[in-house]
Length: 526
Image (cartoon, rainbow, N blue to C red; front, side, top):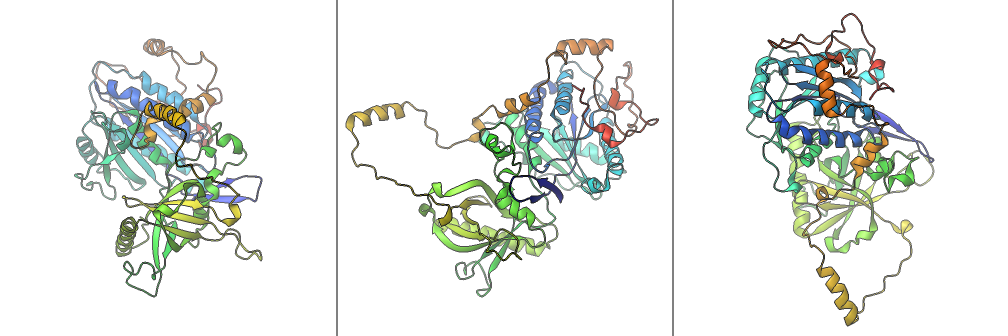
């Protein structure tokens, strides 16, 4: 758990969020497919980091490092903080854009292995030289290899090459294959795991294989998963059900059922982003909508935050105007501290609840734990939520208004027969509209990415155009502004008939050691 302190004009609130582990992204480049992938990948990375670097509140993503593997491995970005570091990350993405997209090169079979080992070595070196409090969050590393090559073949190369490498500090090793085709339906642009891949032969490490389509939206969705609070050290919510109402699910009629759940955001709150329509009203309050269920669940570390179901509602009996705040998703917990039998039973009960609610067309009304300290003599206020089923193994949770929050409103009934002339005019206008069966947010753009990117824009003329940069690189006149790694990189097998072209990040630093503070963004950088 990585604590983050938020500030507001009200009482101090301490929010704890399971911070994502440090991440190493290795872009495995192969020609000629790189020409088809480069633009989409770079655009998706820039869009993602414009969000990740701008989010207020507790940091969701800690360290990030970027490697490129072509004819040799190359460290484009040593481990660096993500939040507030967009200019540096954007410069590294520009480096990827400059890589050649045509021609041929002699592929080195060991380059991918060397990139993994070099990145792991730099991570160990970094974590040994940060403050003790920060080092607690840097205990393990997630490595993602993005490739256009067949994923199964890449996994076999990794298994063979890394069989003698110490991977104890690697929390997850993942191969993401960029598919050749393009999605037919944009609303299903989620990464797909390959079920045919068995556990890796590398002791203590599983190599996951996922497939992502070669389009910007699919890649964005994959990277945005890095922002989720996906810690598995403990379950986050206890959903308590009365056995009198759900006796067909619970065997113990006299005891309430407790479903152990994990909490997941459905979407990012605009109040966490600077300059958005909602966020501009609350720029002094970085906690945003975390002041509801998400915040309270994060605070309840000793005893899990509880939602007590008090009654059922007909699905048609809830007016949408009575719900407020951002929705959250409940899933069966994947907490590793629970034994397998308890996890399986918990998931079966969760599945049965979803099925029964859908069949009955019911919603649940639940009461959250009271706010405020329990030792206070004042009566704490409670928050109420409606819990909605879905056809997936999830429940949607939304805060619902209580009597104290209601304002008087009048709702005059519609007349049965409107004016004929007005009706004809309005119906002609409605008939001219394009009708969609569903709302797909992936097809609606608000230009938020470009807005956030422009907040970090620097005066023009600092970066060379693409064609000029390539020409200057050939003559050795372009000096890249990459940060230096804290460890000496692994040796690179030279390519016959080609001069070595390692940037500052690839030069030996064995004679000089740079402390982690020197990894931070250079104000005079690109």
